[in-house]
Length: 349
Ligand code: MRU
Image (cartoon, rainbow, N blue to C red):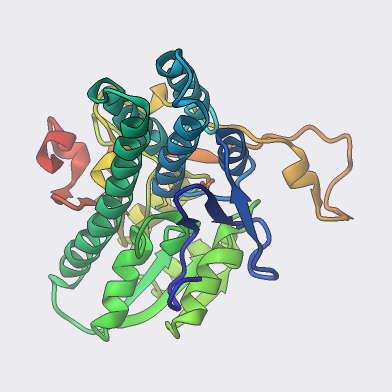
């Protein structure tokens, strides 16, 4: 915590402190990382998670790597190797590679070792500040779009955690929810618990409760019932990668929500900064979807949830086709019906 504001990490210049999100909400444990190896583990083991947050943390990891090798004659190749390595910490969120390529771009701008660390640190802080500003802009644009039809308070259904814990600012999808709340027009935010890692139950519920938002937690399978009962006006989610044709990779369980939303006539909004746009990948079937260890489903802490030997399918993201998305919001604009556009990403950049 800093000044009462939830933040997933704090940069101290020579140390990056990361709030270990695996332990929330039961415990608030901060882990100090002073080298690139620690930062890699923090991302890989999901001490910190959420597409924009892992990009920013990786950028600070490059600064720590530079501190470790700035005086070596081969600093250029060593830093390049550290950047390549960090990029492999998690495969699906394009923000990670995007931030690391910005950091790599700095390497050719420096003349000597002291300047190297200064230039890299300034770039990492810029990436961080730009994300906070993008969050704010998306909150305003998304809320304006949701309110554009007039009417009363809006009921939102969201998935995973896309709030302050997942970004450098107030959040992407949850930033839109925060904006609705600050305007006094949030009826309720329904939160999918988000199996198996429970980002919705452990993190989103924690963020929303702290701020006194009207919120309600449900198992992922109750989303259909909520929509059937007419309790949802918009599904609002984040993204880990949006491909050139507008397909959206996001937390596993997003695709079923999009199918349900279309069935029940509920709006489907995706909110993501432009650092999540991947114009180089033509469509969602080309995205590398992370699969995690089966033990995440077989047990919870010391309690077995399934037989130890059972085969498990544990992809942690899915891909929603652009045709099932009604609106994509970035900090630069709103793209309506991305599935109907020849070049949806170009309308956002
Ligand atoms: O596995 P996670 O917790 O990193 O997955 C996070 C998500 O899927 C979020 O919806 C996405 O990163 C957008 S967060 C602003």
